[in-house]
Length: 221
Image (cartoon, rainbow, N blue to C red; front, side, top):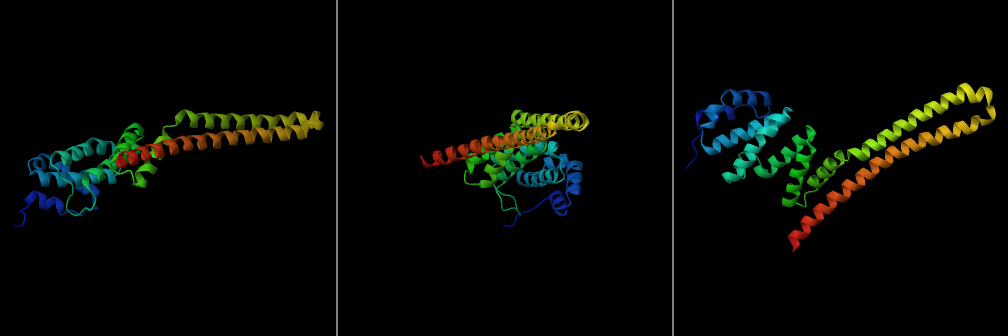
């Protein structure tokens, strides 16, 4: 028997699915009425609203609402919504991680991504995203590299200035030494910067790969 849809559901689903701002306005204007719909209609409209929040960059609001969709999908055992191929629970978890990443809540993004990898360890996109999230959290290492580089750049500028104003005029025999010294200091600064970033990447790559391997091994035993 064909399913009967409420008038409110039909009105909101008639909106262009790419007109995200209108979807948001209509949902928020009639949120109480939507809350009185049956479970499936309420869920579908809320999914489209949450997706619209994400697409418009309202990431903090998205973080508040996406949990409702995730929990509702579990509570009511809803795996798919009409017009979507992806599974609701997994897809919304991924978007929760993405919006958390956008607002720099890296700990939340990391937690969600680890859950996704536990579910689907073969999905390379989850592992790559976890690496990016872990990399953003390597703040002490990255700050050390940047600070060292800036210090070396300042020292290089100082050496070059002294070389031009003093050494070349009064101690020309040391001009070549000063030039080489400025080059070595500059090179040291660049190496410290690239080295810090390379080390941070190595740590995050190792951690993400190790975690994924552990989840695969759990499935095999």
